[in-house]
Length: 79
View 1 (cartoon, one colour):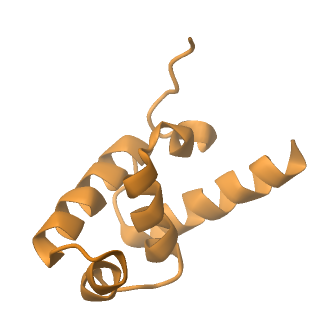
View 2 (tube, rainbow, N blue to C red):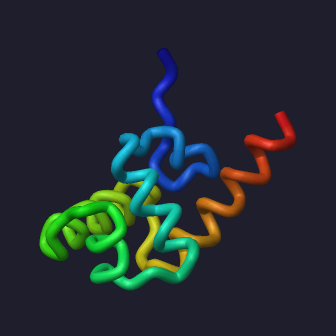
View 3 (cartoon, rainbow, N blue to C red):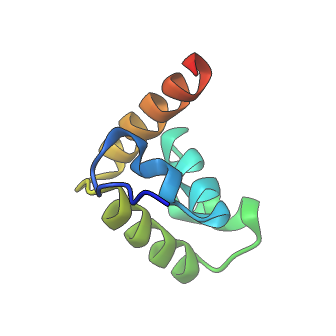
């Protein structure tokens, strides 16, 4: 078992399945309301997931989440 450093390019691997679903929708530009509707969650639950995603990825904005998810996707395709 190797621990991923917060903020490292592969920190996205530490996200739970639900956090990854939320992060992917953030990367597509969804609002919290849109994410909540699509995943059948309350907006408050989405807010908590967004906060955890931001913390786990070591970023400070939704835009940075999108960049990190895109980088993770590219690196996953390359391996």
